Image 1: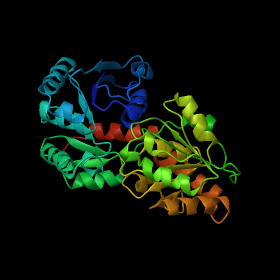
Image 2: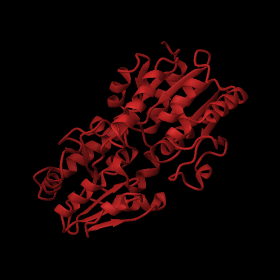
Image 3: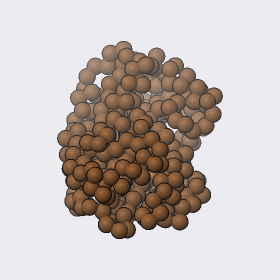
Image 4: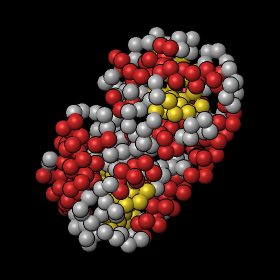
Length: 357
């Protein structure tokens, strides 16, 4: 049986959910190893979330993005485990693991693949100098013999600026486990419920979420999650759940009328794909990832400020836009283009191709 070694320093949120879903499929055909780092959002029971046949190896030398990139032991540990495991395929996830793996491993000998899950240099987080550093690291690493597999078409367009040795596979979700939470669209009634999910940090733009809530005071807004910028959610009609179990989060999403994602940057957000499949009216910001999956006015809405989010929500409530048609189109798109089975088959095909630099 061939071996796959996944390397994931950022073992939380989207990357974690991606690996949970794809390795459930891969473990039937491959022996799977995951080298992972712990972040504040990594669940305490993270190893219980995976198939018991998967080998999970915690990397103590993985300590945040830059804390990993500038830690020599991270490179030594990654290479040492590569030599011990002798994988046929190595898949690196997110920027720090992508840099460490591409520079510590013999990429001309091994089959090495890299998925950014949202390039760090596209973020609005931190100074322009920090973003320049991230972009420089990506540019240097692109000279290594590893194939980039972007997680959306928009991310692929950015990858092509760095290397010709790239392709993309859209993120996908496990629709089977979500079917019991699907609720057919009905015209929203008072109180109208609006939600989002994720860590409350700059990327997810809590300040704009708060403005939208303030502009729609009669509606109930829920943020599923927790984070350091919770203090920006001051509107009296916002409830912050804190971290809740996945079934609880899905129940909240099931009962919502609208899902909004006003992010400053994204890869291809799993939370959005799940909301679309559950037939929520989705409103998102105009950034890579969001605009790759949402077609404005067809399967959701792309918005640019609080007034536009509020106007679109009222268009659905008042019947000026057909909410049923929009949600059915969104759910159909997920089934056809963004399901985990299709994603796993595409990755398998790319793994088996010969990477050409």
